[in-house]
Image (tube, rainbow over all chains, first blue to last red; front, side):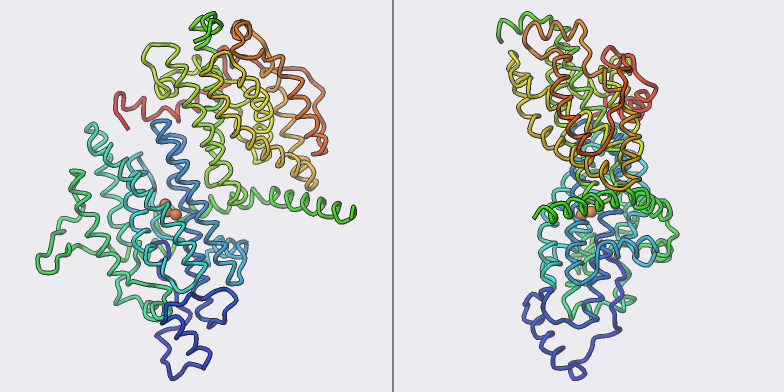
Length: 330
Length: 258
Ligand SMILES: [Fe+2]
Ligand SMILES: [Fe+2]
Ligand SMILES: [Fe+2]
């Protein structure tokens, strides 16, 4: 998912008898599956948590342009190039919807971007891994968009109206991305020996980072309970991770590829696949900034923002002049 | 097929179609280099959209070129398996991106030209050409709308944005003249009423460009000097690098399907 380790603004679920009357009324609405809208009263902690979560999600869409954008100029056919361009364009659009949803909570897009650039807000750990071959573009669509959908399908039912509605639009496009990613993987896995090797290599590198996308294990996830009570989070990290593994293993088999986890196997009793958890120390290192591409990704975004300052200022100055001229003419 | 189309020799038509398809292919490549690096998110989206439209047009022009050539080459074969000297695009579209102002000025100069051209191609005696022009003209009009608006806003905006836009215009001006140059291929195409003579596009282009520069408070460079060669396969050093990148997978893994 694109929001990991979102700190709930408080630890533990606030017990009902400690709630104010307003808070109780709010919780009742959430429990009754009513949507909370921007003008409605909401607890400050709810607002702050949502801003973190939606902001992190928005940043992920924007930074997520980079690893795939890396292959647009090298896409192997005109059709693949067009599909990839359309996908990356969608991701930027998702960023826009999500920043707009965050803005309804009283924070501007520029403020959020500033926080990202200062390292005070995060984006999904997955985008700190490099795309080394064309198969990585397939693996990202298949696994990364696939993991994102797992989470986002649930978020269509989240309690905050603007966020839920953004998710409905986003989910439609994400499932398209996943299909296209898998289509690339099929071409590679069933292609020449070199192509198949690229596909296997991409799976090897993206498997565990994809599992990390769902965030740390539930036992270490101190923020889950309150977020779930607020319906900002609708399923736990481990539930989603399991669902993802169960869905993906047969797809790996269909491709004729080998899962990099040697211990993965179907548990006859549970009906689920048992799997080796990712190396959580790697996950925390990446979150802290020590992944393969953290510095490059952030630098690319900061450079784009700083190099673009004169453009934004120029556009604004022109708009002001025009508005002034219109006002003077009236 | 009309009698007129028959009058154009196949190789001439092929070469002329390559010019159209190579322009959109190479410009799309340049524009797509911006992906994820634009000044605002809205521009990331708009630039990706432009690059995408141009790829679609490339598929149509090069697809038709391959058909006309009749040697079994499709649009991909033409895009990915020719070397630089066989490319027929204008030098303008292979110029490096520079800053955002530079990119948008290049886009504007091209869009203005492409609009005038496509509107004339809608009347082509070759229905296949007219058909593609009809489809591409809508996108091209939208592109012009945007690039023109950007040139005006940034030309008029701040002192810095004005200076950058003027610098971009001055730097790109040498590459304008080639758009209006007539050669034997163009004359044969024009004789058959398949397409207009490039020189006949100049007045309409001047009209768009002068009005825009005026509104943008930019000064049209006072020079007629034109860098040329793209239309006959003599390119700048930049094209080789574009192709090395674009064609890498097709060259490294010949015969693979993707
Ligand atoms: Fe997305
Ligand atoms: Fe995504
Ligand atoms: Fe996506």
